[in-house]
Image 1 (cartoon, rainbow, N blue to C red):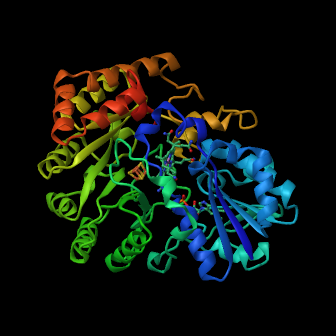
Image 2: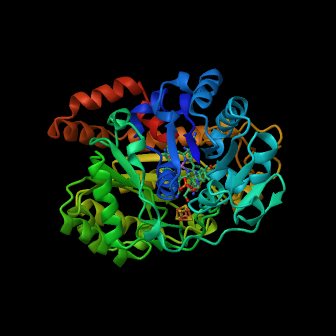
Image 3: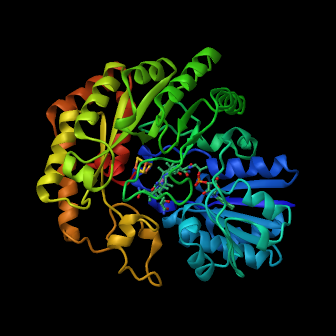
Length: 469
Ligand code: B12
Ligand code: SF4
């Protein structure tokens, strides 16, 4: 079967906006894996990463032209919630150009809102959860009624059990993407192109704002050998660095350490990062020592709040004291540290928001991002806060941090924005911080690059970049 897989473009929101300097563009891991699985089963696949193409590639007429030329039997589109409008346009263009092709939706949004995906867009099937097997069965022509984990025009089938043996997943089909399109360094990635890769799936924590609709709460991981084989594979295709997108790489710290040791044994010489964040409750000093020795340069922590009461209320399963200790260790081994914080969490007061901002400044991490809490479909917070959002009229394209999509129970939207700006000022406005960044840039001979970023981002741009990421 001929299959076209499409990653919609975040367009103006990220890549063609002021915040581009803080974003690392990598080929889509999800479609790379699905393409690998389809090819392993003998199907012909092309992958269009519209994110890496000129905006004209996302125009309906151009999409129709390309679909007509590719003549696929099946089209697969991957999307998160804010990309639903773009995904809708892609499905419409595919339908027009190739009426007999089966059009499939997959990814986080179709997983959490499958019925609505079919109702509002011209998809035949919404794949819920992990797609690695479902897409194969769809391509192999298994009758829809017999495929687990899909919703189709005839109804919703039973869930597909989680994929437990991650070692038998396909390797990413990286030859299907043109790595020349992924060569722009960013504030957080100096060595490019960067491969997004995964060692594990799932996370045992139960944070009330987090989407668990794809990988769930059961932590599964690859063997160190298999994971390193993937690194060798990525390196052979031209990647120079990688980023682990795992929900919780260090869930069992000894496994993370064993994987780092295997990387060292293989002498891969690929810098790597953990920008999705690791849990401060699941680390020990040994992990930081070994990860640094294995080439990890940058890591992020999901601190979220400087108030233990708020951390408890959001079921973070971590404490302020654990955060301080994790940062001490990470600093000791020379990591660049990113801190993720949230504003307007449940149970928050103006005082706890100020505590969080001061906590970020005290931790003195290298970059801090303060996001206004956003209820995402399928999360406990969505059920608590967003039940009044009218799903028929909601504009999903603004479903990103910082946009006024819902009424917060305790703060007006201007208050949330003002608190967020104040938090950024508390963190980035410290003379000590500014002086240290300039010194570091001079030492690393990056002053020119940093000035270029500053020019691109404009006044306050650094704040905005991390606000948006
Ligand atoms: C890396 C990442 C990013 C990167 C994106 C990089 C990229 N090119 O994808 C950046 C930093 C840009 C980003 C931005 C945002 N992100 Co983000 N991100 C992630 C992260 C950490 C990893 C994504 C990943 O690669 N996963 C691994 C792949 C293999 O998993 P997957 O994509 O789900 O794919 C599987 C299935 O979904 C399915 N599948 C996927 N596509 C398809 C297609 C077809 C046809 C089929 C059949 C199946 C299928 O099969 C795959 C294999 O099993 C996830 C968390 C996570 N663990 O997934 C959050 C996550 C996707 N992000 C999330 C959010 C909230 C955001 C932001 C909205 C945050 C913000 N700043 O406002 C923005 C959205 C920007 C936008 N306009 O879309 C939420 C999504 C919630 C939602 N309802 O959409 C997640 C789930 C985090 C969470 N737990 O809440 N993100
Ligand atoms: S620790 Fe991270 S991935 Fe795990 S539930 Fe909380 S937010 Fe989600």
